[in-house]
Image (tube, rainbow, N blue to C red; front, side, top):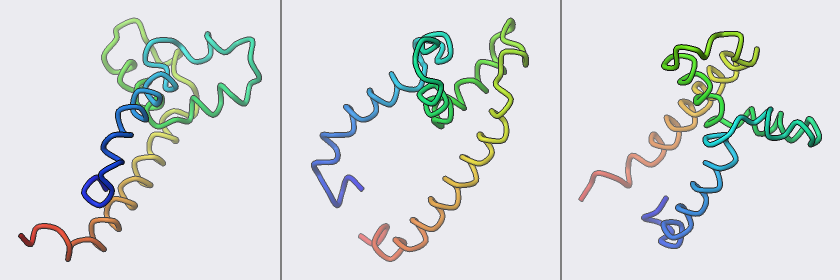
Length: 102
C-alpha cells in the first residue's frame, strides 16, 4: 500500500498510535469506560488488537486467569484471524503479477 500511495507512509504512525491508545494497551477498557455508554466499551473490546492483547495477557501473566477474559474473546480472535487470513490471501493472490518481478 505504501508503494502505491507514498502519503500513506506519513499517515501510518498516527493511525497506529491512535489504534494503540484505543486498544487498551495502557489501561483496562471496561475499567476506564465504566461511566460511559456500554456500546463504546463493546466497540473497543472487539478491536483486534484488544482481543489479542487479552489472549496474550491470559497466556503470559500468571494472575490473569480465564475469569478475567471476556466470554467472546476466543471466538472473536478466531474470527479476526480467519477474516484477515482470507483478505490477505486474496490481496496477495490478486497482486502477485505486480510484485517480485524486478
